[in-house]
Picture (tube, rainbow, N blue to C red):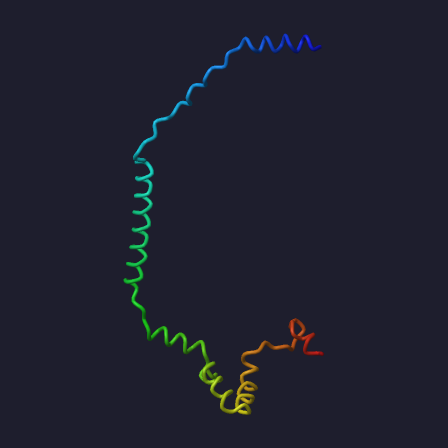
Length: 124
C-alpha cells in the first residue's frame, strides 16, 4: 500500500501548476444614462402631480358660511361645548352635575330594549 502512495505522488509531481488567467472584466459605463433618464421621468411625474394637486386646491374656493352653517346643524343649540363644560366643572361642580344629567339622554346610548348591548349591564 505504501508503494501505491509513492507511485501516486510521483504521478502528481509530473504536473506543473500554472498561473490562472485574470478574470474577464466587463467594460463599465462611466455615465449610466438609463438611470438618469428614469430618474428624470420620475421627477417630472412627481412634479406634475404636485402641481395638479396644488392648482386644484387653489381653484376650489372654501365657502366658510356654508361650513359654519353645517357645523351649527351638527351641534344642537342647547348642548354646551366642551370648553363651556370644563369651565362649569372648574367653577361649580353641582351645576356641572346637573348639566351632565341633562346631556346624558342625548349623548349616551339607550340601555333599554331587547337588542341593547348595555341591557345586561343595566340589570346589575
